[in-house]
Length: 202
Image (spheres, one colour):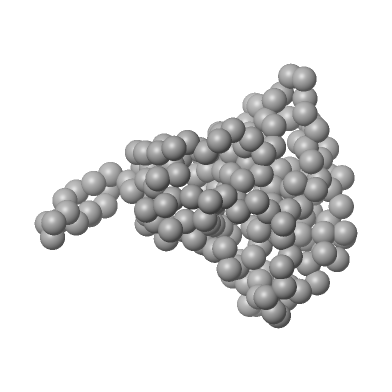
């Protein structure tokens, strides 16, 4: 329950997060596709960017919301079919990952349709970049995917080549504030262009 102001008058309002909403890291969030009922909640996150992992056009009402909040949309069209299974694109995930870890895009929300499989794979690759062990990466994926966990997704995360990804991020400084701290910051040495994501015009 929150308090919203309308014409200077305080009104009680319920803030409803999108399905499968969770904080990944400070200023990095994940969820399923937001609907209009979730917009007031999203406003409280002060989002700067959204990563959308579906090939379908972004809903018009969502586009209008992003425009009203000056939020950038990065779209990566990853197919979400289970039968027949569609192989996850390493190049596409890598490009999305570059956008995700660029602090100039934070606060940022990652989402696909339900926030389980495609979103889970991107978050899993982020965790590998953070040196998480594979068992922890898979456990987090399964926590969101539940009974619908996909073997192909888990194989993709297991075989994703994080070493080549690190080499392409030469311009990033990883700064850890204390051992075991969650307050990881990623700072750029310069303004080099390290991603080729399609920045959707909203």
